[in-house]
Length: 408
Ligand SMILES: Cc1ncc(COP(=O)(O)O)c(C=O)c1O
Image (cartoon, rainbow, N blue to C red; front, side, top):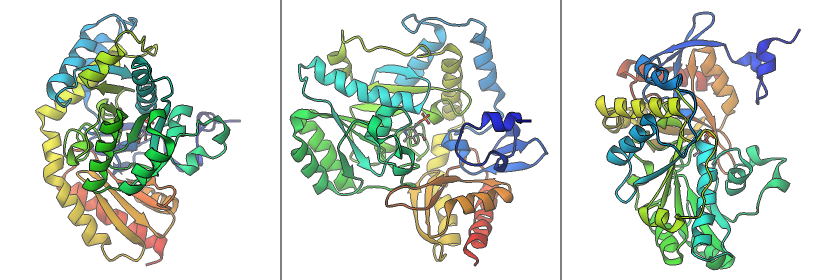
């Protein structure tokens, strides 16, 4: 007989590999058979405030029985989340938001937004959105086309628009590609401020971001910061782009915005961009601004502020880095350690899947990463609430796992 687990797993990997999770508390996931797994990656790098937060569940429950209102209609939860974002999170000049149910819907909407912006300006020839190599922006056909993640694109190539790609680190190549493609055909440029799952925290130079920002300004190409992983405090600032001379016109968020409690994403654009779009009929999704998701999201953001968790990431991030460098700085199976805040990647000479499995066997979850130039990597990105002892345990356990796989 097919078990429920087998039926559920319309997903990559072997279902039996993953234990059934029946609860969560702080930085731990609790399995059916009572194991407590240290969540060293906040799930899929979503659980910024940690797990078991009943306040968030109560906020969602308080409005859930209201059911559904078409996104065009205001509700108190929608308005409260907009106010929280505009008052406390968005940079200056960003006063508008388009809600979605996650990262892919957000980045896909940003691609659509770049096109709508250019069409509103009468530039029908502009359709290309430049992406970077490597990168990941989601699993809709639009976001797959704009990204460069060979493993996740394989087999789907005929469905994907031929969006141009630039290297993640080379400013000269960026300028060359823009000229070759002809700026009069380019609508947008999308970038993760620090590359997530595709590159395990690859970080470009300040010069790179200066060149990208200046080129986008010069040609009126909309610059989209994909902050789905890096946003809402993960790197120690509200948004990852704020570490660099990178000035986006559009900021895309997901993951940590709902803290992993609800599917929620948000796209914001500068007031100028929004004014240009007026009247363009930018269509919403059925679940744009889902009431329970908005209520939960506003509570997650309130908790981040109240508990000063972003400041905590900024203060404790160097401690995480120091631990990783002590444990892996000279490790033969680790070729690079990079990132900032609570967002680190370890590039490996051994199989990431084997490392993830060896860590899980020791009740630790780390995130598998890498594509293209980054063949094998894992990411360490715990909840912002992780204690010093838990950080020690995380790094020591990961060391054991990598040692085992490397035969060290
Ligand atoms: C940078 C980035 N953008 C977009 C996405 C897609 O988000 P989602 O999986 O919520 O659709 C992800 C997911 O990992 C991501 O890391």
